[in-house]
Length: 490
Image (cartoon, rainbow, N blue to C red; front, top):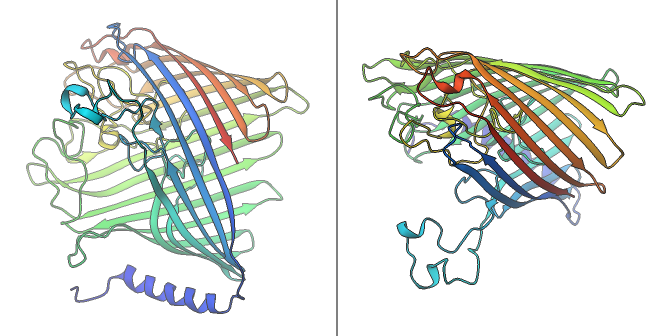
């Protein structure tokens, strides 16, 4: 047993006691249960996703149901959760949804049991899918603020770093097992939190813990909100499991021979400001990542983080007009493959998208964005394998994406987005890689037949630049994709 209770255990005990005392004063009442959620179905087809004209296409469908119960257990006492039904077997701990056409033989027939009832060829049913619980937390409201306990969603600012995945077609989410208390003072609140990322062995000092504080100002009269989110993640030398290079993920931390045998101590600071009115919306968020990753190089040096990113959003909504004009722009630092002891790449949350193809779906024949440390995706000149859904993220790039929207009626609208990007840091050691990612043109037709129902049909045309050639190693040819997706929210 541990000699001393750690900080989290002590705080959990104190807050648990506070919760017990508080609930004793709540008058007894029958619990009311409210349900909300999203059912969605999607189809995606991308031609020439490897940009090499070898005829390899990426096509898949998804469907899922997200149920979010809300139990009002008493005055100010609420229990909330999220059930992921038909969740992805290939991408657990996501809300991607199950692939359309999941057979009883879950895998390639030549590599798995295909006898009797496990054969797709003779089956007359589909594989039974899973139900996962991704959130379960309690909130207690009273005159001084709000107590928050449980596995809760984390969201901040524009969602570039902390993103709870509450959009209609968001496939990922951020959660923590945490204890926090929100102190509310007028339009300002302070929310200190302690989150247990991993408990590890109950009798060992191999835990991983987040120490977080969010300070937020929200003024509904001026339509302004702004805030700061500070996160410090700490773990002992037995707890770090940061990705180290292997055949399955060569773009990970520390270079060949790296080991997870150091303490992890990282710091992430996000700041943002947003003004959202009837006529326009303007927001800006910046993030800075530093600290030690818990990895040592083969030479014994500690691998550190030193990364930053900025995201800006703007939308102009003229009065009594069917037109809207928008812009997304930003930058994220990129990792230098020649510096094994430092990872300089900032990787956006995978829910934060600026386009349909680029920086959303894995493309090309190499990891030019160097996001494999997070996504695990591998592309190389030997296999040219792109076999993933929208796992890609923004990193190592300066991007600009203007949008024009036109509403034909209350139900029908058309969006046009043109996006371009410029490479930050050379991602291939020993090669001179061009900066031009090229251009993408996305066209979306949106149909909202009734409240809570959305159907989106999208086409993306990618005119790749010379970045994708990798300094003469690879091809860079035209690609296009189509997507149709519908969501019912309730």
